[in-house]
Length: 232
Image (cartoon, rainbow, N blue to C red; front, side, top):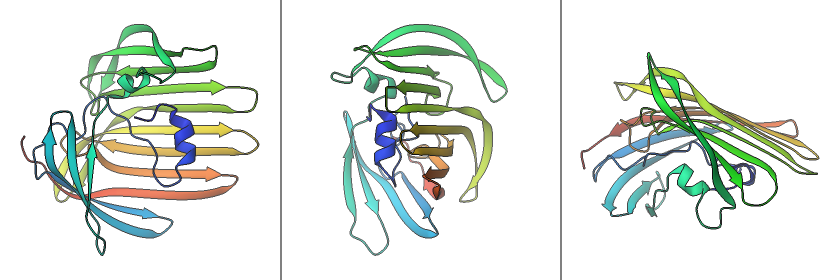
Protein backbone atom coordinates (compact mmCIF):
# COMPACT_ATOMS: atom_id res chain seq x y z
CA UNK A 1 0.00 0.00 0.00
CA UNK A 2 1.30 3.39 -0.95
CA UNK A 3 1.12 5.62 2.08
CA UNK A 4 2.41 8.95 0.79
CA UNK A 5 -0.13 8.78 -1.99
CA UNK A 6 0.46 11.92 -3.98
CA UNK A 7 4.23 11.70 -3.69
CA UNK A 8 4.07 8.22 -5.18
CA UNK A 9 1.61 9.41 -7.81
CA UNK A 10 4.01 12.11 -8.93
CA UNK A 11 6.91 9.65 -9.03
CA UNK A 12 5.12 7.11 -11.24
CA UNK A 13 4.49 8.41 -14.72
CA UNK A 14 2.75 5.34 -16.14
CA UNK A 15 1.12 3.65 -13.16
CA UNK A 16 -0.93 5.71 -10.74
CA UNK A 17 -1.75 4.35 -7.27
CA UNK A 18 -5.46 4.65 -7.99
CA UNK A 19 -8.11 3.47 -7.61
CA UNK A 20 -7.89 2.50 -3.93
CA UNK A 21 -9.92 -0.21 -2.19
CA UNK A 22 -11.14 -1.42 1.18
CA UNK A 23 -12.30 -4.69 -0.41
CA UNK A 24 -9.83 -7.14 -1.97
CA UNK A 25 -10.22 -6.75 -5.77
CA UNK A 26 -9.43 -10.46 -6.27
CA UNK A 27 -10.84 -11.75 -2.99
CA UNK A 28 -14.27 -12.84 -4.18
CA UNK A 29 -13.03 -14.80 -7.20
CA UNK A 30 -11.77 -18.32 -7.72
CA UNK A 31 -8.72 -19.63 -9.56
CA UNK A 32 -9.04 -19.18 -13.31
CA UNK A 33 -10.85 -15.85 -13.05
CA UNK A 34 -9.41 -13.48 -15.63
CA UNK A 35 -9.66 -10.05 -17.20
CA UNK A 36 -8.34 -8.69 -20.50
CA UNK A 37 -7.32 -5.03 -20.34
CA UNK A 38 -6.68 -2.81 -23.35
CA UNK A 39 -4.66 0.34 -22.62
CA UNK A 40 -3.79 3.30 -24.85
CA UNK A 41 -1.09 5.74 -23.74
CA UNK A 42 -0.21 8.58 -26.11
CA UNK A 43 -1.74 6.58 -29.00
CA UNK A 44 0.30 3.44 -28.16
CA UNK A 45 -1.98 0.44 -27.57
CA UNK A 46 -1.12 -2.48 -25.30
CA UNK A 47 -3.02 -5.55 -24.16
CA UNK A 48 -2.63 -7.69 -21.08
CA UNK A 49 -4.51 -10.62 -19.58
CA UNK A 50 -4.55 -11.03 -15.80
CA UNK A 51 -5.49 -14.49 -14.52
CA UNK A 52 -5.85 -15.54 -10.90
CA UNK A 53 -3.64 -18.60 -10.57
CA UNK A 54 -3.95 -19.34 -6.86
CA UNK A 55 -5.43 -17.82 -3.73
CA UNK A 56 -3.56 -18.66 -0.54
CA UNK A 57 -4.23 -17.35 2.92
CA UNK A 58 -3.12 -13.73 2.87
CA UNK A 59 -1.86 -13.63 -0.73
CA UNK A 60 -2.78 -14.34 -4.34
CA UNK A 61 -0.78 -15.32 -7.40
CA UNK A 62 -1.72 -13.57 -10.63
CA UNK A 63 -0.40 -14.48 -14.07
CA UNK A 64 0.17 -11.51 -16.38
CA UNK A 65 0.26 -12.29 -20.10
CA UNK A 66 1.15 -9.80 -22.83
CA UNK A 67 1.27 -10.61 -26.58
CA UNK A 68 4.85 -11.16 -27.76
CA UNK A 69 6.29 -11.23 -24.22
CA UNK A 70 7.00 -13.88 -21.63
CA UNK A 71 4.31 -14.42 -19.04
CA UNK A 72 4.94 -13.01 -15.57
CA UNK A 73 3.75 -14.16 -12.17
CA UNK A 74 3.00 -11.69 -9.38
CA UNK A 75 2.24 -12.57 -5.79
CA UNK A 76 0.16 -9.86 -4.14
CA UNK A 77 -1.02 -9.32 -0.59
CA UNK A 78 -4.04 -7.09 -0.18
CA UNK A 79 -4.04 -4.37 2.46
CA UNK A 80 -7.17 -2.27 2.89
CA UNK A 81 -6.49 1.40 2.19
CA UNK A 82 -7.30 2.61 5.70
CA UNK A 83 -5.25 -0.21 7.25
CA UNK A 84 -2.30 0.95 5.18
CA UNK A 85 -2.69 4.50 6.45
CA UNK A 86 -2.10 3.38 10.05
CA UNK A 87 0.42 0.60 9.35
CA UNK A 88 3.65 0.66 11.43
CA UNK A 89 5.95 3.35 10.09
CA UNK A 90 3.24 5.08 8.07
CA UNK A 91 3.50 8.31 10.05
CA UNK A 92 -0.25 8.50 10.60
CA UNK A 93 -2.72 7.69 13.34
CA UNK A 94 -6.50 7.63 13.29
CA UNK A 95 -8.17 10.75 14.61
CA UNK A 96 -11.87 11.55 14.72
CA UNK A 97 -14.62 9.46 13.18
CA UNK A 98 -18.32 9.92 12.52
CA UNK A 99 -21.24 8.31 10.70
CA UNK A 100 -23.30 9.70 7.84
CA UNK A 101 -25.50 8.55 4.98
CA UNK A 102 -24.37 8.61 1.36
CA UNK A 103 -26.11 7.90 -1.93
CA UNK A 104 -25.22 4.71 -3.84
CA UNK A 105 -27.36 4.69 -6.95
CA UNK A 106 -30.99 5.15 -5.89
CA UNK A 107 -30.51 4.23 -2.24
CA UNK A 108 -28.94 5.88 0.79
CA UNK A 109 -26.62 3.80 2.95
CA UNK A 110 -24.60 4.16 6.14
CA UNK A 111 -20.98 5.27 5.78
CA UNK A 112 -18.07 5.81 8.15
CA UNK A 113 -15.98 8.98 7.95
CA UNK A 114 -12.50 8.82 9.48
CA UNK A 115 -9.68 11.31 9.77
CA UNK A 116 -6.03 10.25 9.79
CA UNK A 117 -3.59 12.63 11.38
CA UNK A 118 0.22 12.74 11.12
CA UNK A 119 2.09 11.58 14.21
CA UNK A 120 4.31 14.67 13.90
CA UNK A 121 3.28 18.30 13.67
CA UNK A 122 2.40 18.81 10.03
CA UNK A 123 -0.23 20.39 7.78
CA UNK A 124 -1.21 17.00 6.46
CA UNK A 125 -4.64 15.37 6.82
CA UNK A 126 -6.54 12.45 5.29
CA UNK A 127 -10.34 12.20 5.41
CA UNK A 128 -11.69 8.86 4.17
CA UNK A 129 -15.34 7.80 3.79
CA UNK A 130 -16.01 4.07 3.54
CA UNK A 131 -19.12 1.91 3.20
CA UNK A 132 -19.62 -1.80 2.58
CA UNK A 133 -22.26 -0.93 -0.06
CA UNK A 134 -19.79 0.91 -2.30
CA UNK A 135 -18.02 -1.14 -5.00
CA UNK A 136 -14.46 -1.34 -3.70
CA UNK A 137 -15.52 0.04 -0.32
CA UNK A 138 -14.09 3.58 -0.70
CA UNK A 139 -16.71 6.30 -1.23
CA UNK A 140 -14.50 9.36 -0.87
CA UNK A 141 -10.90 10.36 -0.08
CA UNK A 142 -9.66 13.88 0.57
CA UNK A 143 -6.00 14.65 1.32
CA UNK A 144 -4.31 17.99 1.81
CA UNK A 145 -0.66 18.64 2.66
CA UNK A 146 1.40 21.80 2.70
CA UNK A 147 4.86 22.96 3.71
CA UNK A 148 7.08 25.91 2.84
CA UNK A 149 7.82 24.58 -0.66
CA UNK A 150 5.02 22.26 -1.78
CA UNK A 151 1.24 22.32 -1.66
CA UNK A 152 -0.55 19.05 -2.49
CA UNK A 153 -4.22 18.22 -2.82
CA UNK A 154 -6.17 15.03 -3.67
CA UNK A 155 -9.93 14.63 -4.04
CA UNK A 156 -11.38 11.25 -4.98
CA UNK A 157 -15.05 10.40 -4.79
CA UNK A 158 -18.06 8.65 -6.23
CA UNK A 159 -20.12 10.58 -8.78
CA UNK A 160 -22.86 8.03 -9.53
CA UNK A 161 -23.63 4.65 -11.07
CA UNK A 162 -23.26 3.84 -14.78
CA UNK A 163 -23.82 0.67 -16.79
CA UNK A 164 -21.06 -0.31 -19.25
CA UNK A 165 -20.99 -3.03 -21.89
CA UNK A 166 -18.04 -5.38 -21.33
CA UNK A 167 -17.62 -8.31 -23.71
CA UNK A 168 -21.34 -8.32 -24.43
CA UNK A 169 -22.32 -8.17 -20.76
CA UNK A 170 -23.97 -5.21 -19.06
CA UNK A 171 -21.99 -4.29 -15.94
CA UNK A 172 -23.22 -1.71 -13.43
CA UNK A 173 -20.27 0.35 -12.19
CA UNK A 174 -19.58 3.04 -9.65
CA UNK A 175 -18.11 6.08 -11.38
CA UNK A 176 -15.33 7.79 -9.42
CA UNK A 177 -13.64 11.09 -10.22
CA UNK A 178 -10.16 11.97 -8.96
CA UNK A 179 -8.14 15.18 -9.10
CA UNK A 180 -4.62 15.46 -7.70
CA UNK A 181 -2.40 18.54 -7.81
CA UNK A 182 1.07 19.44 -6.65
CA UNK A 183 2.29 23.02 -6.75
CA UNK A 184 6.03 23.49 -6.39
CA UNK A 185 8.15 25.51 -8.83
CA UNK A 186 5.93 23.97 -11.49
CA UNK A 187 2.43 22.60 -11.24
CA UNK A 188 1.29 19.07 -11.93
CA UNK A 189 -2.37 18.12 -12.20
CA UNK A 190 -3.82 14.65 -12.69
CA UNK A 191 -7.49 14.30 -13.57
CA UNK A 192 -9.01 10.84 -13.79
CA UNK A 193 -12.27 8.91 -13.88
CA UNK A 194 -12.57 5.27 -12.85
CA UNK A 195 -15.43 2.80 -13.29
CA UNK A 196 -15.50 0.10 -10.59
CA UNK A 197 -17.50 -3.15 -10.32
CA UNK A 198 -17.11 -6.01 -7.87
CA UNK A 199 -18.41 -8.39 -10.56
CA UNK A 200 -15.19 -7.95 -12.56
CA UNK A 201 -11.88 -9.50 -11.37
CA UNK A 202 -9.63 -6.67 -10.22
CA UNK A 203 -12.72 -4.40 -9.90
CA UNK A 204 -11.39 -1.80 -12.40
CA UNK A 205 -13.54 -1.82 -15.56
CA UNK A 206 -12.49 1.41 -17.26
CA UNK A 207 -10.24 4.41 -16.59
CA UNK A 208 -9.52 7.72 -18.24
CA UNK A 209 -6.50 9.72 -17.02
CA UNK A 210 -5.21 13.14 -18.05
CA UNK A 211 -1.80 14.00 -16.59
CA UNK A 212 -0.52 17.55 -17.12
CA UNK A 213 2.92 18.69 -15.99
CA UNK A 214 4.35 22.05 -17.00
CA UNK A 215 1.83 22.37 -19.88
CA UNK A 216 2.65 18.89 -21.26
CA UNK A 217 -0.31 16.48 -21.15
CA UNK A 218 -0.32 12.68 -21.41
CA UNK A 219 -3.65 10.87 -21.67
CA UNK A 220 -4.23 7.22 -20.76
CA UNK A 221 -7.32 5.13 -21.49
CA UNK A 222 -7.93 1.61 -20.17
CA UNK A 223 -10.89 -0.64 -20.96
CA UNK A 224 -11.69 -4.19 -19.95
CA UNK A 225 -12.47 -6.02 -23.19
CA UNK A 226 -13.53 -9.32 -21.62
CA UNK A 227 -13.62 -11.00 -18.24
CA UNK A 228 -14.40 -14.36 -16.65
CA UNK A 229 -15.40 -14.58 -13.01
CA UNK A 230 -15.21 -17.98 -11.34
CA UNK A 231 -16.46 -18.85 -7.88
CA UNK A 232 -13.91 -19.44 -5.11
